[in-house]
Length: 402
Length: 222
Image (cartoon, rainbow over all chains, first blue to last red; front, side):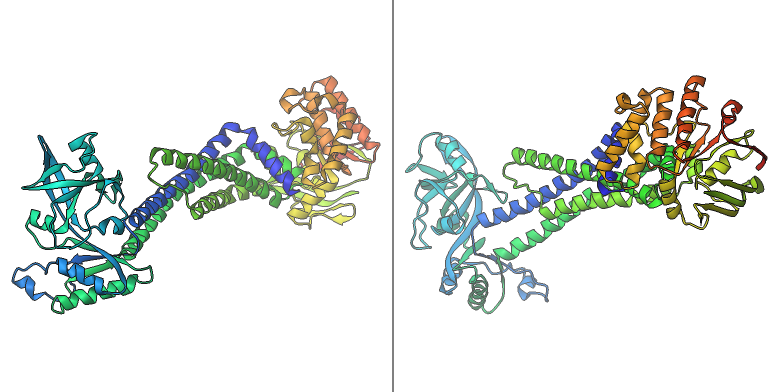
């Protein structure tokens, strides 16, 4: 029997029982679509996180106060001391390293902002003029924090977009005075609308010079120092330099944590990739279920078509040919099912993309390939038994329909 | 052409051995017209199945065109069936989802004959059996006589040397039954050996050779 005739004959038997065929294709396509959509979601989440991270700035090294110790007990802990703070001078010292391009110290706290009768709680960020470039933020109007002495505590502030609208409505607000806690600040700029990034809404913050923030919150320590390396290759030297400089400044004690943004990113990347795989794997189970369905339906088909099988044998079809006929049917079923599933899945992915434009959902090519292969392989695998059963039928009893 | 030497066939029913055929010796030549008659359970159908290679004898040898076909494996027997043997059944055994033309084409497809040649042969058969206007009808849209004509066309599409018919008129009324028999008889003029199983003496009596079977044995031959 020629291959094309084999497919043709198999397709006539699929067309012969239309509702059975349609249901099988539906089961198969749901399985494939589930794999496509779920892996696309996983991959989307991964890309989303990666994008968010790179929008935070490039070639970043982050310095945190304190260190997660696994080796022994810090004597300070016995005295109830917290780890040594990061000071502004620590931050400035980092600029001595040739690998470091610029730094932005960060202090964070909440305070009440008020203008005339309007007031609300806000997150106050204390930093320097460098923050704008280091964190890839963009200014809407006016100007950002003035450059110059890191220790000067000018009473100026830059408002997040939403805060400005809440306090000033459609007025520009530049040059006006607002009250933060018990101090007065002059508004010198407004941030452009940016929305949420890494769970931190830059539209709802107020940025003041870092020294002013220290006065406001009555502290002297830093929450974090953002260090921008000169280039990607300078990331590691910058990290080592930061560790060395701060160790020297802190009486040779390693009491800060320095990580590169890449390291954090890689961890997230790994976690989310594993998640995508896991979710894809779970979806693949539905493909196996569809495979069992195919087996069930093929077994029924064999018993329904006993007479036809007997006839084919009488007409001179050898056992191998009969097996091939049932294989061809299963492959057609799973093939059409997986193509329909791919289309269904891509439509689903498009729909999700429309609903959540910020999520870059794309089914990864390996998942699409894996879904197709899995459905074809399950289709064939689960039709082995029915096909063998058909081929083994005794022609005399089969013709009698027994 | 067909030679049976001491062929027996027995079945196990429960733990009892039941002999369906006992020591059959038979020889049929090309173009012979043989009818096999007898009461039900006499072994007519078993004999036909053995001739058609659908079943294997328990003992004895069966030579077809001089070669011992009992020694062949299933696949080789399938090839012999495809090339040399045609079947016509009482219940037609047409594939319900295929048109008349496609049913006739089926043995040619299974034998792997190229489409152009298939088309030519099917057209010829449709013409010969007066089925031209029925080519695209499915079996459930055909009358009993038309169905059996399709079945005969299918059985002859590979130009077999032997045509086996098991009660071919059993599901037909007398007039159409007679027409079908005439079509089958016409084949013997083309040197096809026709072997007909029937319990209708009016039909069996038309054959040049008539075998009477009782209890798995041929009791008379004319």
